[in-house]
Length: 171
Image (cartoon, rainbow, N blue to C red):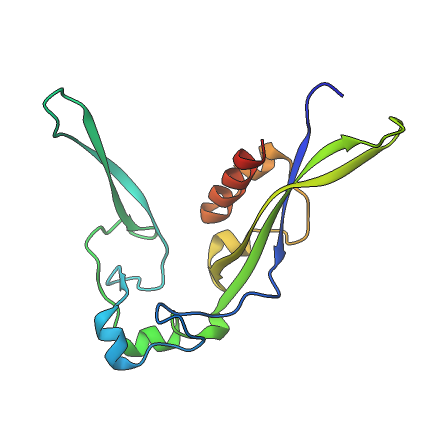
């Protein structure tokens, strides 16, 4: 075998559990939330975010360009976010039941010592990947199914980003 073959799959992470920025397995109290408020699109507070455009600025004397990503709502493109009210936080982001935790595994094809059989070995993995239960990237995944690298590159949103990142580190 001249060129290594790889495959990628997502599985449920049974060891992961909800943990908020307070480091505990519970939602933030209202007082804690005031110090750590979530921000979202005012019209679509549960929508995901994506890079809407990149802004280029020249800040160095040698003319080097700095890139700043402008992030916005995946539904409407709004880039001005507002604080999510505490009640909405408790119902969605702070609700442990709304979080789904996955692991991403990359395997590399190898030959057994006899040279007649094909075997797979783990080449990389990432765990405790947090998706919301209505995230289209999560909903589009076929959990426990192997994807080729080309298929992994086409996965939606954060799932595709994670798959390509773990695959890149494995190579």
